[in-house]
Length: 340
Image 1 (tube, helix red, strand yellow):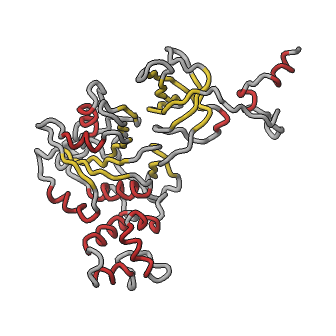
Image 2 (cartoon, rainbow, N blue to C red; image 1 turned 120 degrees about the vertical axis):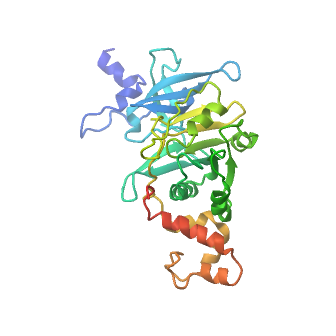
Image 3 (cartoon, rainbow, N blue to C red; image 1 turned 90 degrees about the horizontal axis):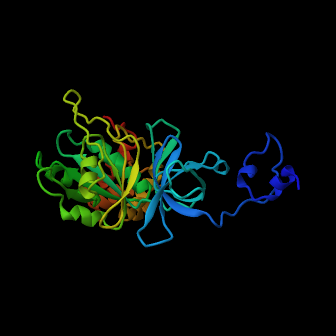
């Protein structure tokens, strides 16, 4: 049998991916990848993906496999947190390279845009269930508008938000906690001069949590405390700008020793929300959403609406005025720049 004829009969999935321009596929049959290995993408660097793969042997035995995205995936992005199927050399030995051939369905996707007028949304993390918004109470000072925008992104992605306030030894958390009390956002407070509160571990245990926040707020310190040996670089705060310097350049997913995962992301200066539909934000607040069924058609529920049912419910004592105002603050943040 000639080599040319054999190539069409051998189940070589690479051959399916390279038909000539404007030519018909060589065959309609596609590989099923029944023998593919399942892994989780834990970090990405210049087209190379590090995947955590559980070995077939003893429980808890895992290995890291470096992989590239296979051609059949086209332009479909692979992001940290994705559960993927791998073929090729999945031994994890130095110098080996596997291929990601399938991305399993995602349960959640955290997205952002570079700015509010950016038409391109960027998927950051897949399959998380909690967004931990890390902010320092001082050095650098808190930025409530950025917190608001992160909350909007969390609600849009169906993630549970957790407000983590660091450096409580430098300033009191009372005012900031009161700001977000009407929204019912869970919170934890940490200090630099004491051990990490057990409550933090309790909030993170057995969950997939994403850390977000601008540079210098203590994300890497938090990760290094939770996971001894993680060795995440710790940034300093500029004396000129009062903002932190970037130390992490890539998102990385790490297993927690007490169960669950944590995903550390690079420090952010802005969090664009061009991908968020403001009309969908109300669905994250069931008590308010129920009342808005009484709104006239086309009502945006903003504070400028003359006949919004939210105002009538507040006047009648059915809704907490502070909660409605907090919701509208989040709605307004969709139109503001996070760096303000």
